[in-house]
Length: 138
Image (cartoon, rainbow, N blue to C red; front, side):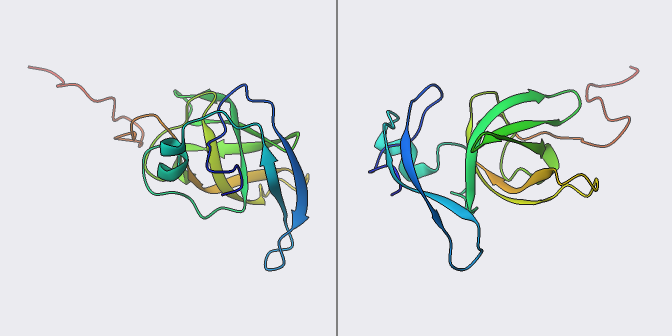
């Protein structure tokens, strides 16, 4: 593994080398040192759902559960995060995520996270308008 069998945890101070992925042309972290999380968390992907295949990783910096969006800090850059792009859970601040990036489509060069795994929150139900849950009038 990239972190010698350990999982990165919020607050870990890590060092790493940056190498370019030959297939995607995107930077990857290698020779990562300083991870303090358990080997079990590393084997399980650290969150709910399957381990991700994303080429990027980072920590959830902020997330608004009411609005369903926030930001992941990855290599010193803020990457937009929306719950609809999360597989198997909802993000919580401090979660270590694996994801791919795409242009956010705003014309300003900003990025958004897609194919996101590692979220530790419960999956959302009823994401559409007007579905507040509960029983309604009785």
